[in-house]
Image (cartoon, rainbow, N blue to C red):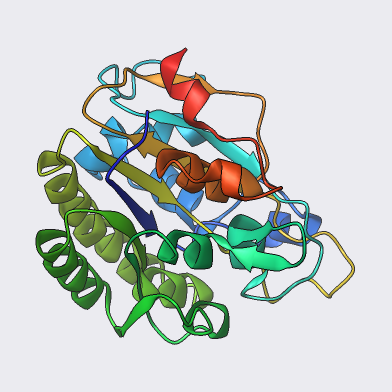
Length: 271
């Protein structure tokens, strides 16, 4: 089905490794996030539980949350260029018959394309989109709420600046606190979704400060998809990150407008 609105929240920090010995060996499951989840047994993140977030990383534990309401799993990157925008380009670049475009540009040709973020060169070069600069996660969610109330159709992309900064600074306690704030806002989003809204929660960040260009960077990133109709599904064969952009286009009924990427994640929500 096509949706009137696709709301994508980019946590943007979850591909950053934590600062410890196993990170030096390129451990895919060793991140600031997994340390927060492992070391905070009394930590409550109800919205992220419902989205399958814990099961993304700990899918052998069936008792973490049996009431998941989303399609969730891990996506792989193809990129070995270690730049902060690498994940964004891989997710949202798309190919036309004659040039490279972006999901933001193709969406903006037909409906609203709204970007809420701190200054990021890739995002702020999307000239056809309406762009709103924010400096905190609270500001980002406040602007998103305003835009969703104002517009009844379109693609709403929101990147959270604080989680990424705290992960880069390896500030465990502050990252834990901020994830609680993010969870609260995600819960509000989920509770206020219309029947023709699709919510996607992803992380675009690939680059890290331990890896040089041309060498493997962090390769696994979480993807969670939720609407008011679909049941819980777990995709386990790790699609590519570029399929996030394909999913946005498919959800907006625009996938036939591009040559690639073609593999949407929406079929997983129907299995």
